[in-house]
Length: 183
Image 1 (cartoon, rainbow, N blue to C red):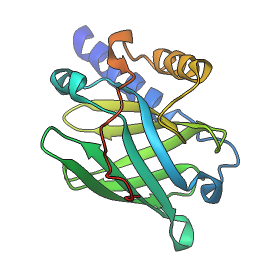
Image 2: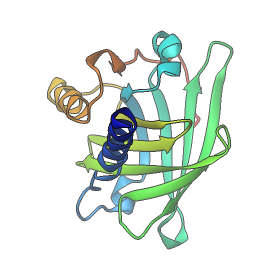
Image 3: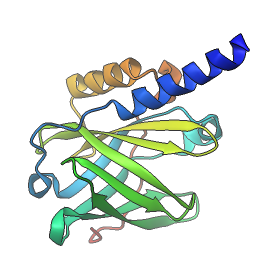
């Protein structure tokens, strides 16, 4: 019985931690829109470990939609090709917090912009409940290069959220993904 209560308490603590993140105050989607590169990643899914060394910097473009929603087109470098992925982020009642439907996992996930200066970097937290609670933190940059201070800030944030140091990575650049002229 004590083990069951402890397990329930741990799950509740994880859920509270994942949802206790506050979006950036006064988030501005218009300033946030545009081209971003995912230059840092922290992910606590054990299923991610075998793919860790295959991850490359990916590029995405956020486009504003009427009503405060946004489209994200993200190009991912896979071993066989550069694959575009498309997402529609639906706004919630909290600016900077969005939900989207993952066709890959057939479920709704949420995305929170927790920090950005709009012109240089953004820290985004993604939460999902897929057989258990998972969280992913990502560092985005307006260019494929990021200042060391910003990278250190991201790593400190990820560690403060409970990510193991080994789950935090800074991927190498992708070769010609997307091809010149895309995005």
